[in-house]
Length: 336
Image 1 (cartoon, rainbow, N blue to C red):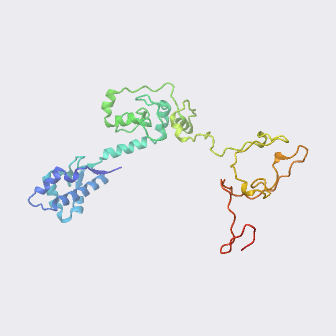
Image 2 (image 1 turned 120 degrees about the vertical axis):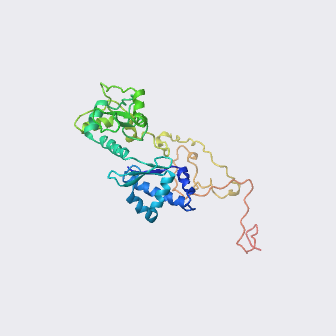
């Protein structure tokens, strides 16, 4: 796609700063020239004119100041006079990525051609059927799905700038394809193209592509490209509450034998003497193991509401006083 970029130091580009030295320049001239020239470059990029600005574009953006702006830019080396294909007045913007970088028409058209070739089943299917999932440059096993890495599978054009054919397209990993894109001639001098494999290796996605396009194929390798797209079965044990042991696992005490002692807090029962209670919260019935061997087992008491546990005390419990505001009871129970 077309785009225009400015260098990080474009605002103080040396040729631009020379405009300030013109006798007619004032404190506004540099900013005026920079803004006008940048707007002209955006239209050149949008219409893929390769840095060429025709007079109509210059006049539309410059208005009555057009001639003066053109003169300032030409004097500073920012514009070079030229003509259009039809012989009309035009100017060529200085081509320096540190100042203004515009994508050329050939770059954009080549990018579109690459995209169309790699999406054409008439090219993709026979190439991947011939090469399988192996990079023809380095021999690494490529992957066609998942996050992009150097092993991501691509189709490389052996003849950059030309439309691809089955003979000029090969399977290549992204690492080799990207490195070769910078300088294909130097890459070809230092790397030897591997021959097409006699027994291609097909992963899951290549086998599926070939099968869907009339070449029934089964995967003969388990490549890494299938792992990120298949949910692994959750075989880990679930975390939860440990189930209680079944009742049968705890043998009941024999008749006449006391149950195993439980660790319960010791309670001072000195203050409950004579109250008729055998144990706190026991329901006033003797323990299970306390009956005679011939007596029938005691009937279990109905469930009672939970009573708060009493805190052990080492001192006798104080006697309860009377109602607030009343007189204190005497030991004998009569009031004075």
